[in-house]
Image (cartoon, rainbow, N blue to C red; front, side, top):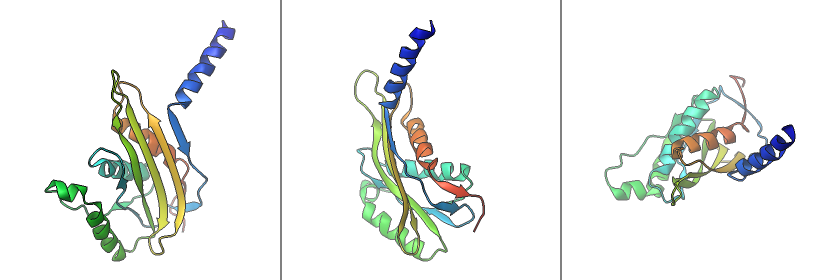
Length: 177
């Protein structure tokens, strides 16, 4: 019986691995005690407001790692043009950042955030994250990942998994300067 289990486990592992892809390099050590800000993410997906959803999940995941990151001030989305105008959001967020005592910013992009079409409609998520110096803009760390979920899984649940996998590569020390 154990001989039959081994091929089954191998096939299962290959199948699960085919559903996700991560590029997560080792990061420098960051201090959770420094000031962090979540800045606007670029939305390259076909889902409106996907970047804002990722920013909220990212902030919660950072908090779980001991980082109490602030988020740039939201622009009230009164109409479709405001929602779709990422340049205005970036400009306002950069102006806000210039007036804040922030050490690190975390930003990135959302490449996929949707349900695949078809009978099962599995969720598909692709995200890139990067940590930068708030003052110089120098990139210290960058990682990307994608995952296709299962038929009954939600897009945001799949997004949580991708963000968690990416942030697992972020080396953070608690309150060390």
